[in-house]
Length: 338
View 1 (cartoon, helix red, strand yellow):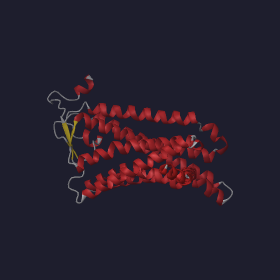
View 2: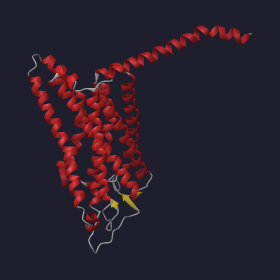
View 3: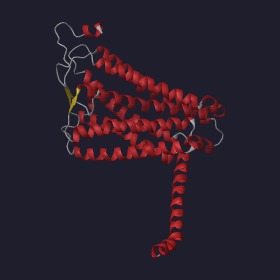
């Protein structure tokens, strides 16, 4: 604590503001249409991820290590959407741009934790596909329920602890210059740059976690698919290669949806307008939770079969109930007349 306090300097008074101002979408024309779009995205995200979780939970055939990771991804997407989108609508649609200091740090913690877990889930699914294709005979030995649960639990633990440290370092900063955050939420990068004392610890940790949480997973996923491609090149027939690769299409779609907008934003750098950067990153935050369940329902054979089976059972049960009512109807009439 003394080390952090000494970073303030002798001539700087420590200032902890009562609130921050989120200025993200101000100045963007026709932005209210974007808020309507966010409402639609949130509804689809909640319904889609709830359906995926329910299907995996109810169908015993889907209780495999792979679908443990898919269930956790849907769970994280549901929580992430619920943590971000309603608050965005409250801030910008209802003009509640003032957010208290503690609420801002809490908002930051939940958003970054769920965003980190989205990436870690993609890593878990990538590892699952890597072992399934490269070592199919040893898949059930290497990727067990216990292994997948342990892997996901370790990801949760790392994400929570690392973001808590990130938030803890922010509490050591003095905000005596400005309280206006030029982003769509309590963005860590925007916040520590507002500090008037030494923000080096926050800067170093932010860069370290960016590599560890964003770029290292991306490199791992790319290398895993290089290995998968090499393994598939040795498969005898094109039909077998297509069949094996088809099991990866859902995961590849999720990776593309999540990483391509981020890569575009980082590659463009200062060349992209501030408003364009904010819109792009906000779409990166809200799009994957909406599209992930749609992709898995449409591109995963097991989930499609399970959904069709459940719908068929429900329709048949309704038909049976109607038949019983029709058969019993004359008796109800006689009973009423008596």
